[in-house]
Length: 140
Image (cartoon, rainbow, N blue to C red; front, side):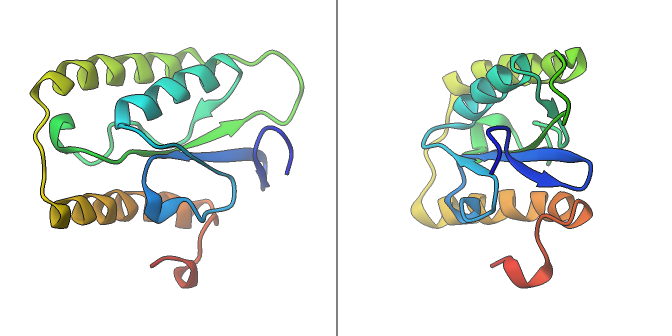
């Protein structure tokens, strides 16, 4: 594996997530924490030249009810200094939204936590299939 992630077709990719159901995916950067922590890591990666492939606010789930967040990133294959302002803008907006929502966080029971993990996985399946990152056999 290259320091930038897993090579796929025309780009290197990384999957950044706090969802334990997805940490088996090649190229996954798993972190313990909240969606806000995932977004902070995404912001750092965009400053390092990565760009968003999937949207950080996918799913129309209120942030105070979203415990898991998974995002697909791409890095250019060349060594030039790439910076994607649009990706940064999306992440900064998501950080604002999640920052406000953390004040209104709702505690969920254990079965709801499993449901949230499953929902996050389901939201990412089409992206993973589209880019050939997962096949039908690899998903729970």
